[in-house]
Image 1 (spheres, rainbow, N blue to C red):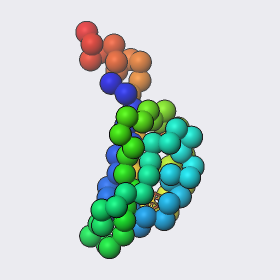
Image 2 (image 1 turned 30 degrees about the vertical axis):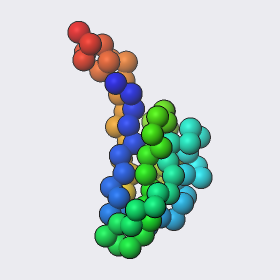
Image 3 (image 1 turned 180 degrees about the vertical axis):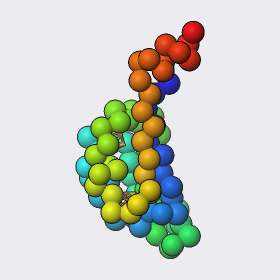
Image 4 (image 1 turned 180 degrees about the horizontal axis):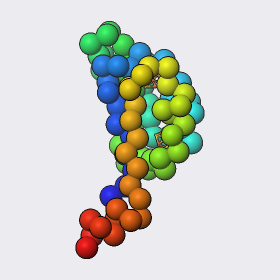
Length: 80
Ligand code: SF4
Ligand code: SF4
């Protein structure tokens, strides 16, 4: 299983910071409007998150982004 970045769309204000800092191009501003009235960020299909944490560090909105990091240890556990 690969790393995952999870977007809580309704906490995002669509500021565009996280797409600009992601070194792997995993994030983009979409066209759907969230409950706050913003076009929120979304995960780019097929992108590969390296769980660097840059997006979470840069985001000004608490808990808008969450990184789920999968280690080699977890991989061997799930495949056993
Ligand atoms: S953790 Fe790093 S690679 Fe993954 S989406 Fe955030 S900035 Fe991009
Ligand atoms: S940095 Fe945070 S508020 Fe800004 S677009 Fe990304 S998730 Fe949304």
